[in-house]
Amino acid sequence: MKKVHIIAIFFIAISIGVMTITLVDSSTYANFTEAFEEEGKEFHVVGKLNKEIPYSYEPEVNPNVFQFHMIDMDGEKRKVILKKSKPQDFDASEQIVLIGRAKGDVFVANDILMKCPSKYNNADDQTLGSL
Image 1: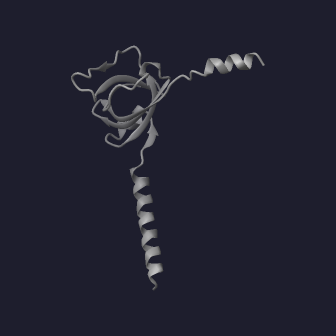
Image 2: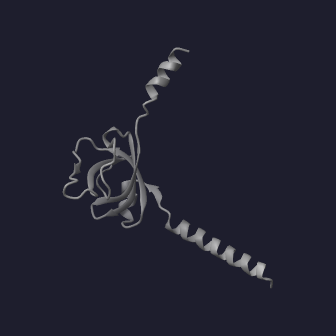
Image 3: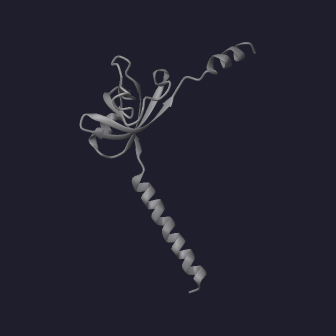
């Protein structure tokens, strides 16, 4: 075999290995029920902030712990511990996507994605209304 063939086989084998690891390690979207059934596995959970229960953030004690309660898309309420500081405009978020794992009776999130209301919504409505 030529060196080119050996190198090509080597790169193909590495590519297959990387794709396999990526597929096995990737997290999936779920609700709290599914996430707590498979405790320890990483999930993306979509929901909204439960504004009935106040959140807790004490940056002087630990700036990398933010605790709040969330309601998933099926209506299940759970306590969430985010291992980051409180996100800017958190109170204005319409929808939250948590990336993390269930642990005991809380969901421990490593990351958070927020959908906030667009400042352009009202301007677009007014522009469309005048057409």
